[in-house]
Every structure is written in structure tokens, then in C-alpha cells.
Image 1 (cartoon, chains in turn cyan, green, purple, orange):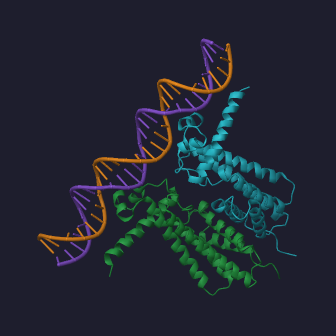
Image 2: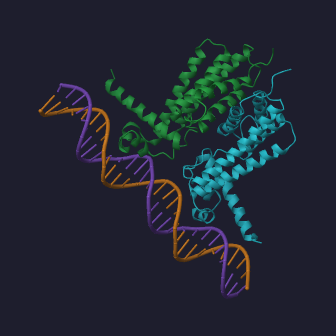
Image 3: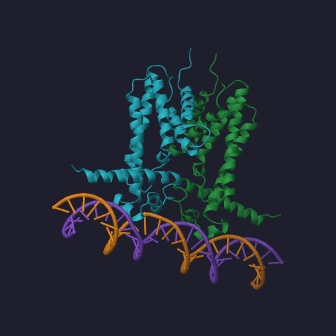
Length: 199
Length: 199
DNA sequence: TTATTTTTTGAACACAAAGTCAAAAAATCT
DNA sequence: AGATTTTTTGACTTTGTGTTCAAAAAATAA
């Protein structure tokens, strides 16, 4: 068992990532200092380097963590045996709810950082691509089953994910609408772009 | 006449702003150095401070410039005497085309910077609010004239602007689709959310 | 308890980038 | 041309922050 020690370390890493992501989202990569991240966890800057090689590494791991959570969510949706309408509705709601509850660490880490190595960048971009593909799959399924019109899948997906991702720019926990309400409305309206308009 | 001198200075300021915005969009506020901005214009860092008080001021002026361009665009649309469908279509297309051609300086300056003073922040936010309101006006008009369904104006506007603003995240001059094509498609699909579905 | 390993600390270093400024250069005016 | 004003320069200062590291503290094992 490689474990008690290792597990404890992993847990601490997670803790750091969560907290770091919150600050990173808020202030951006360059605007966030290692000291700030450390302070929030009542640590000192120095000890961050015990867990992460450097600041870039920290950001990279944040991306991985976030994408993992997103992918888990949509995979569950894909595997369900709802019809495409319900699937897309669920995917949209899931995405919004995640973005709200974990606003801390959501995609707001928009453009992957320039300092990433080739492989790191590729990894993050690949994860995002996977996520997009799941949406495409749902849309395709809907077209094949003739519940959606013959839309341009890529365009529609870009519109949907764009609308969803932009929520982080304005969503506020204490705002007038709950994430639940927002997600309902978004799903309703966005689906209108797709659903075949016949009687 | 306050003029020849002043005018020349103003022109230079514009030149700097345009160039600066390009770099700022590319690398983000914290990621861009004054030296970099200066170098691109074959100037030196020092002389930047002859035109702008400091880096924050530069960013602030960029925001003002961008919003002015956007507002000019949509005001023209509003004043035209097209029907709401055409107006909304135009507004969407205008926004996308602007974002593409002036990708350099578009909204990508997402969240106004933290270092802004109260007044500066308020100013930028107010300009954005004006821009949003114009969209709301078009949507309202469409509802009143019964060409649009009875949608939640704010939600729909958030969806539309979100989808539009997100384009900067992936749009590429050399990509497969031209800005023109993208804007047509976006307008078509987004309008489907609104147009009354009856025969 | 003592020895060993893991984790934290805080000071020190390095370096990049914002901002300053006096003097030089360029432009404009008389 | 010479005088005056505007603009540019580049070296300098200052500050902030990523990173390192040896030593201290804490945790674990014997």
C-alpha cells in the first residue's frame, strides 16, 4: 500500500487546487500571486513548492481537475437513456449548475496559459475537445432521430457552449436569479434553436 | 482653435490605443508589458507615459474606445427602420463582424480591471449596460409587434450576447469559416429562439 | 523516548516590469 | 537662423513576485 502518506498528500493537493482555482478565476493567472494562494490556506508561499513544481504546474493541474469534473458530468448524461432533448437539456443544466456551484474553479480559466508546455497545452485542449464532442454527439443523435432539425452541428454547439460559458462573466450567487432558474431558462431557449418546428 | 497640436496628439493616442488593445487582448492585462506595447509601435516605454498616466489609464482608455465603436454600430441599427427581425439580425452580424475585424480590440478585455477607480469602473460598466439595453429594446419591439414570442427579454439577451462574446475565444482569421458565414449562421440560429412559431 | 522522515518556514535571491526624470532630439514658431 | 515648445530617449530606481534552500518544526516509526 503506497498509501496513507500518499493519500494524505493527494488530499492536500486537492485542497490547494480548489482554493487556488478560486483565486485564479477571480484575478487571472498573472494577477494571482503564490503568496495569495498560500495565505488563503494559512500556508506560506514556500510550502506550495513542496506540492507543485511551480506556478504553471499549479495552473495546469487546475485545468485537469476542472475538466475531469465536467467530463464526469456529461458522461453520465450521455450514458443515460433519455431522448436527445432531455439529454441536451440535462447537459446544459449540468454545465450551468457546475459553473455556478463551482464558480470557484470553472472554465473561467479560459485560454490555457501561454507558458504551458506543448504536451500540457495539448492535454488541456484535448480534454476540452472531448467535452465538445459529447455535445455534438447528443445533437447528432437528435438529428438522426428526427427530433432536431438539420442544423449545422458545430455552429449550434458553439452557440450553446458560448452562451453557457459566458455565464461566469455575470453570474452572481446573490443575484436575482438562482442557478436553477437560469439553467431552466437557458435550456428552454437554447433548445428552441434545435427542435423541429412542426405540428 | 485648440487644434493642430491637440489633434495630432489625439491621433497618436488613438494609434497607441489600437496597438495596445491588440496586445492586451492577446496576452491579457497582467501579461502585457508597457515595453511590449511600445516596441510594437517602434517607441520606447518612456514615451508611453507622455501620452498615458499609467498602465491602468491605458487599459481604461482602451475600454472606452472599444465601447464607443460598439455603440456607434448598434445605434445605427436601432435608428434604421427595419423590422425587429432584421434589426436583431443586423445587430448580431455587426457585433460578430466587429469582433472579428477588430478582434484586436474587442471585448476580450473582459472583466474590467480591478485596479480601476470607482468612476472608471462605473463608466465602463455603464457603457456596457447601454449596449445591452439596445439589444433589449430590439427584443421588446419584436414582442410588441408580435413577431417574437413572449420571451424573457433579459435571459434571451444574455444568451445572445454570451454566444457572441464567446466567439473571440475560438475565432481565428485563418479558420475554416469566414466571419461572414459565422455571423449568418449565428443570426439564423439565435433568431429561432425568438421568432413566433406559428403558421 | 529517541531516531528518522516528512512538512513547513521565512529569509534570501533573481529578475522582470512599472514608473521617473533630466537631458537630448525634433518640431514649431518668430 | 535662432528661440521656444513639444516629444523622445534611455538609464535609473523601486517594487513585486516567482523560486530556492538550509534549517526548524511536526509527524511517524522503532
